[in-house]
Length: 275
Image (cartoon, rainbow, N blue to C red):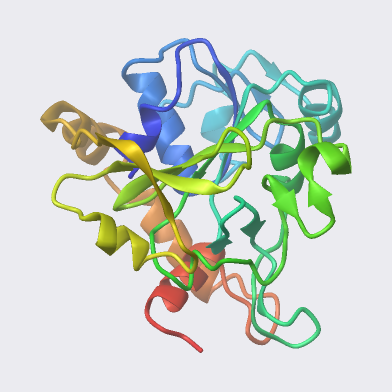
């Protein structure tokens, strides 16, 4: 997924980098076809050029070589809210048919089955970035027709469309999964099947979402990762498996209370049928 997601980024774009797989994809893109990619992290690293994959938004590797260091408030006020972020790159425990993301709770908000880490800066990124990319593993519990809680708004929240709610950014344009790419319909904003991975069928993808998925007439085929991309990921960029390690850490160590887990761990639980 990281390789496929990296290809969605273009040289010279300004990207607000999320944690987990978005972090891997952005750094892979910068190391391959988009060396001029401007990476911005919530902690205040502007134009970060980490020599290794950052473990978190506060990783010291983000400081060396960056264009600018500022406070977190400056990142949001001067860059994000001023419309200077071209791409927001996010993940989440749940993504629905309108591209709404849930990173808050699984189940009822007042009495949740699972309490997730929350928004962080994701809601602001989803609102203000000129376009948003989402990366998540395909499973019907992770892709319900309607998320349990809207942390980061997509194209249609419960109060109306982005335009009706006065939300400035264009919203999610592509959702990269481990089986297919979903893309937003230009008119309605509903996610549609746009591209398939090799060997994956349309029915397999349809079983992975909780709504009647519209399939575009002309489906693209996703190019598998090249040998060079995989070697760069496994041997140079991420030999320690940072997303796996940090997902385990957030899910099992950094607990805020009973039933609290990290989003990646929650997605795994959802995929394994946690009730």
